[in-house]
Amino acid sequence: MDDQETDPLVDAAVSRFAHDGFGAPLREIARDAGVSAALLVKRYGSKEGLRALCDEHVLQSIRRTKAESIHAAAEHRPLWALPMQDEHAVLTGYLLHSVLDGGAFGRIFVEHMIEDAEEYIADAIGRGLVRPSRDERARARYMVQAGIGSLLVSMLLAPEGDRADLGQMLRRLQEETALPSFELYTEGFFTDDTVLRNMGRYMSGSPDDPPSSETPPTTHS
Image 1 (cartoon, rainbow, N blue to C red):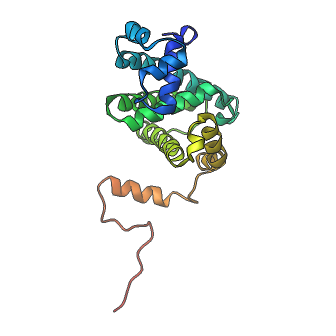
Image 2: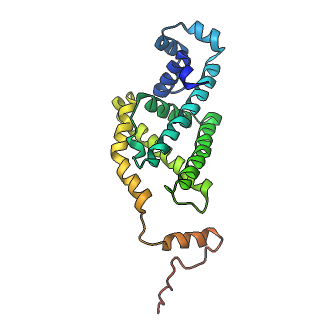
């Protein structure tokens, strides 16, 4: 389904699911779209059929939004300086409810995002914007899951009034985390690579190695 030809009923369903989760009844979606619930059933067969079209639409929209983010990075603009459009907020709310809902849909969304992230990161490496990783797949998975986790915490702990305004929730998260996030990604955290090298030795199967590169001090009884 092309984004420029999105069914307005699908748009209404995506927005309702993004705000209320997938327990939202068809009658509320129909009311948002200005049609009857009977029409939704006739056109899509069931709420599950409508949900499948919503999933497809949201996946395509997420891919487009990520591509915009990489373009912004190529121009050395902050990725989160992209316009905080209502569409982006709705996509984020839909994704978060998919993860909270669990099951196949949530897993599919996350795996798609990880696969897409690998592609975007590879493109950024090719542009000279990002350093290569020892394990590109693992890094992409961590970055996607960390980002989703941060959004989930922000949504779940937000005051009741804020949850109804997805755009406000995202703006608040941006204000709280944008600078420290980019500081960590740009400048790092540790002053040298000792912790990384020690962790590498541990993960490679040498858990009995000393906890640092220095010789442990000798103790006397």
